[in-house]
Length: 186
Length: 182
Image (cartoon, rainbow over all chains, first blue to last red; front, side, top):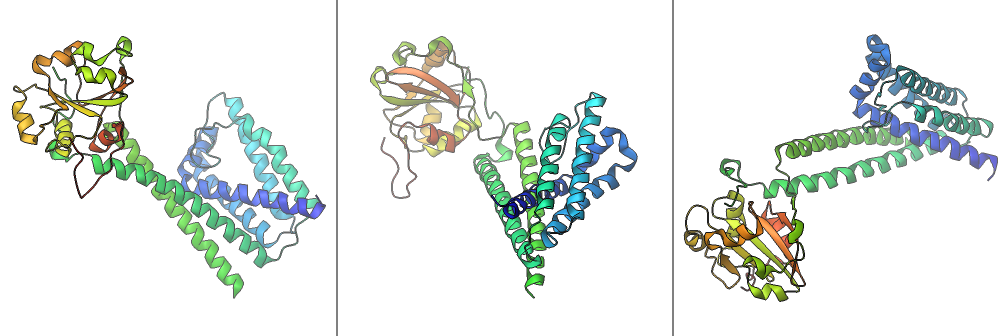
C-alpha cells in the first residue's frame, strides 16, 4: 500500500465513522445530553452536546472538501481525546453511564473509548503524513454516495420494523371485541 | 453548478436520514407499546413436560394421529374471542390438511358453536366433558398441539389466523378459487 492510498483509507475511515456518529447523535441528542449531565456537567450539557455534534459534522465536512488541511484532523484528535477523557472520568465515577456515542444502544462509557483513542489518532496521523489529494467536488461526491448508502441502510431497518408492525396490526382483533381473548378452557 | 448540486444532494440525504431515523424510533416505540400491552402476533410456547413423546390417543385424541407423520391439533373453546376469529376462518369446515380442531365447550355443549361456524368434518372433534383437555392438563385456548411421527412434540398459543395457518404442517395457500378440502 502506498502512502497516499493509506492516507485516503485513513481519512475515508475517519469521515465514515464520524459521519455515522454525528448523524446518530442528532437523532438521539437527548441521550447525549443525559450522558454529559451524568458526567457532572449538567449546567452545560445541552450546549456541550450541540458542540460535540457540530464539531463532528464540521470535521467530516472539512475533511471531505479540504482533504489536505491539517486542522480537521486536529479537531478529530481533540474529539477522540475528549471521548477518552469522558471514558476515564466515567470509570472514575464508578457508575455505568450510557455512551450514546453512536446514538442508541446500551454500551457504557469506559475503556472502549480509551482503547479507540490510538485508532482515531493513528488514522489521523496516517492521513496527516500522506494527505489525500481529491478535489472538493470529488470529496462531495464521495460524501453524497456515503450519505445515500446510510439512507438506504436506515430505510432497510425501517421496512423491517414496518413489516412486523403491519403484520401485528392486520391480526389484532377489533378492540371493541377484545373481551375473553384468552381464557381458561375449563 | 456541480458543487451546488452535490451540496444539495448531501443536505437532502441528511434530512432524509434524520426523518427515516425518527420514523424508526417511532416504530420502535409502537413495538414497545405493543409488547407491553401483549398484543404482538407472537405465539407463546406451552410446555408439554412429560407429555412430550406420548401418543395422542392416550389423551382421547383420534388413534389415527398415532400414525400421523405430521399433524397439528388446534384447541378452541366456544368462549374466547381469539378462538372465534380462528374458527371464523375455518367456517364451513375449511380445515387445512393435517390439521384437527378440538372444540372445548365452556358455555354450553359446543354444538351451537359448531353449527354457528359450520365446523362439520371428520377432523373436527367435540371434547365432551373436557375429557381431552383434562387429560392433557391444558387450561388455555387457543392452543396448537403438534404431532410428529405419531408423538406429541410441542405446543404453543395461537394468537391469530395468520399464526394458525403458519402452524399447519402442510403449508396452506390462500386461494380465492376454492377452500381447502376437509
